Length: 112
Length: 116
Image (cartoon, rainbow over the protein chains, first blue to last red):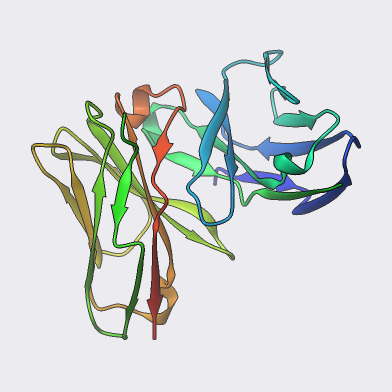
């Protein structure tokens, strides 16, 4: 069965302390891996799409990378406003058509 | 441009009742997908509607159903509610179907259902 696993479940960082979140997947024939940010009481907000191993995307203090089996979301010099739950999702091959499969998320808290 | 609107935001029901949730997508978006989010299971795909047709369905019982209208607004219905149906129900809209998507789904703020 296809699986998407995120680690760690929770991460507490001091402001300015860089770290990485992991998303590993077992989907074969990956058509896309996506990162979202979710604030409490809100719906997820799209951050990045990665399509192939070696691809990287950046947005402000966030950088997402993709290998054949996992993706990393690097948070560089985080600020308190980066506190959120970060979700990754995968889109599998055409036989699992249009089913976005989400990981359980990593809850990040950045303290001043 | 108005975002995705879900109503109601909060509701409380008792076991055995049914509930209908509504989702108005961003103007011009034809795909609406629904998700259930719980602390234990995370975000799980329920189904997708595109141009009034159900395109795909997740692994949920038949008590969960939905529909989409010609203006792309969508409703989901849960019948014979169980305690385990307590969750945040999110809908997301996009211009293209999920199968063709680049991942940029636009989510609403959700409807929080509590079943007593």
